[in-house]
Structures are given as structure tokens and as C-alpha cells.
Length: 557
Image (cartoon, rainbow, N blue to C red):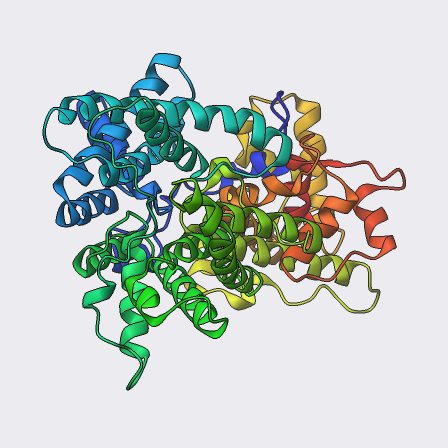
């Protein structure tokens, strides 16, 4: 975006619309726990630093499974407690160490508030709980080492964000937890520290001996059990009740993420069985499915909006984790290292690179704007609707004899149209049945006072030029209602549209050029622009549009 505020027709005409609260979605009404809950929790914790830090910690637990929701974090802590009280305690200590490091180094505080800084610390704590018997003289040592490991994971995350992401555009994900979870136990074992389990740590199959044989009867119950345990294994929880709580925590915040994770676990199970890489006992334990759960959620709903293009990519990424696990397991086990979530990291990176090269029209989600799959889907749908309307109007304008096409008023409820007709009558001071430039300017008097007269006249001239269908220099009632309905539709989706558009600006210059607009249209399934349409939009010199100019184009074209 540009530094200097830009005067736009859209910004000026906003004065015609009353301020309205952001409408809640059907999911938010049916499931009040869904989403990130910032609108509900932020006013409550304002000025309460201890509560704010508690909510940051809960969000960190949720971010382990790509969920930014404090209620989900609380349910996840309960799942850890069911598995092991020490595992829950170590996870909390790891988060505390990571947050302390961020505060001490004065890094981006928003990352801590969103749970990004602490989730690797939570993972490190869970992993160290498996190699640190909480008994004897080693206990005090571990109560110090776990927060230190969390702090190191935060430092590693910050380094990877500035170095790795800056060069590759690939997110660090849980790689810091993998690195710290490998290096610290090896270092302590090498120093001869007490209370260290030095045996190779593999994905937990401790329950496989007690699991029923799944070779007979319907495989569906065993696959379902494997899916549920796969969710639990994200936190190294082997118990079925813990797995059910992890799945519940995801479902409370995002049903789409829960569905994607289940689809990923099922894909991994079937891939392992069909390729002969996994046994039924391994499938039921979920030990080789948790990486697929994470990969499917990340690719299908977090880094891309859930669409007919992203879901197959999520399935492919989930399937890819199985051969990666088998390739990595032997060398890591040979040196006494756990597999951890490395297959998830590598599978996600590989799919992101392949999508970037093979499907450039699939627009990713801006990393600073990641919320839930449902919100990403809503952004995609808003962009698709607004761009489809724009593309339709552009086609009619470039095709003589086709007419302007159906008006928005014909699709709206009569009560809404009547509301804007009443506004038109109030603005039509001389009761002429048309709005003159002077009357339109008077309606916008509050905003006009902040702009120069020349700027205001130029903008209003543009509005009249584009909306005055009969070219008489005034807006009649039908033309006015059409303009306001366009304005209202654009206003309702403006924030989501711009958030969707941000990654399209590949060179990050705050402008939209011809190639970027073509990619944007392809991303929502719209027809590409014809050469004459490109000239109509960008001019003969193909001058890129600022974001404000593009929004005005959506409104006035």
C-alpha cells in the first residue's frame, strides 16, 4: 500500500452508507467457539496483563495444530493432562521460556499474542517430557532446562523467519522444535547429565501390543480409531481419550480444519497400507498419521483457502508424509533421534514449492493474515463474487449491442431497494427526480470538506460518468440505487477482498499490473482479459493501478 493517503471515489462515497457492524457468519452463530475469538476476548483482557499472557499461552498450545483459539488451547492442555501431567507441565514451561525470550529481545509482540512464538516451545516441552523421567535429582535440572529449550526454540524461529523465509518464502513451521528436540538431549547425554533417556525415540507404538487385530471384519472402525489417535499423536499423546480431545479442540475452532485433518490422517493410513509401508497396528496407533494431519490442515485451509484446487493439494501433501517418514526414519533412528514432525515440514515445503511453480494462479494466504480455513474461504468467495461482477460488466462494456446487463436491484429484496429509494428522495432537494452534481456533493459534505474542491469535483465527475447510463449529466433513481448497491456490496467485502489481494502483488510495490490482474482473475475462475480490455483498464501505456484505483474500478466500471 502507498504511504500517502489516496483520495478515491470509493472512500468519498462511503459517507452515503450508515456504519454497520460486521455481520456474523452462519458458522459463528451456530458455533460461537469458532474462529480466533479475538473480538470476544481482547476487550475482556485489555489492561489485565496476567490474563493477556494466559491467553497468549493458550493460543500457543492451539497453534501446535494450526489453531489460533484460546478455548481450543485449554482443551488441548486437558488432553495433555490425560496423557501425562508432566507432559502438560513441560509444555507450559516451554511456552513460558519462548515468551520470556520474545519479551527480553523485543521481537514482534503480535507473534506472541497470536501464539506463533510459543507453539514450538510447547512442542519441545512435550518431546522432552518423553526423555526426562520426572523423578530424583534430575527433576530440578529439567525444570530449568525446559524453559531454556523453549527460549532457544523462539530464537531459532526468529532466525529462520528472517533468514530462511526471507530467502525462500517458506514458513519455518515446527522446524525449530525438531532442531531443539534433537540437539538438547544429545548434548546433555554427551555431557553425562543425569536423568536422560538416550535410547532412540521413535513414534510411539506403545499401545500397539494391546490393540485388537484389524485383519478381519470391516476396517472402518480401525481406520476411525487411527484417525482419532493421529490427532493425539500431534502432541505425542497415545491414548484414545487424549486423541478425542485434540480432535474436539480443532472442531470447536474450525470444523473445516477438523475435516481436513481427518482426511489427511485417512489418506496417510490408506497410503501406508496400499504401499505396504505401514502395518495395521501402526495405522491404528496413529503414530504415522499425525504428520499427515498437520500437512492437510496447513495446505488445505491455512496457507491456501479451502477450494477445489487446494483440497487435492492437501491430500497429496498428506500422502507424501508417508514415504518421507520411511525415508527419514532409518537414518534418524541410527543416530538416536526421533522422527518428530520433520515429514510434515518437508512435505508442506515441497507442496508449496510445486504449487508456486505449477499452479501460480492458486493465491496463497498472506502469512500475517492467517486466521481459520472458514475465514480464508469467505475471503475467496468475496473476491470471486466481486471480481465476477467486475468481469461481467467489463465484458458488456466491451461488447456493443449487449446492453448493460441485469441490475443489482433486480436481485435484491424490495425492502432494501425501497430503503435506498427513500435516501434518494431525501437527497433530491429540488424534487426533480434526478441528482445533480451539486446535490451529490452536498450529500457528501462532511467528507468533501477534507479534500480539495478540484479533487472532489474530479471524483464526482467520474462517478457521474460511469453511473449516468443515459448520459444526461445527472443520476436518476434507478442509477442511484445501482450505485449504492454496488457500494454496499463492495463495502461489506472490502477488507476481505484486500486481504485476499495482498499476495497477488508479487513484487510488493503496492500496485496491480497487467500480469498480476490476470493471475487474480484466474485464481477465482474468471476469464482472462482480452487485449482491448487491458487497454481499457491500464491505458495504452499499461500503467499499473494502485489498490485504491483498482477498488474504484470495481465500483465504477
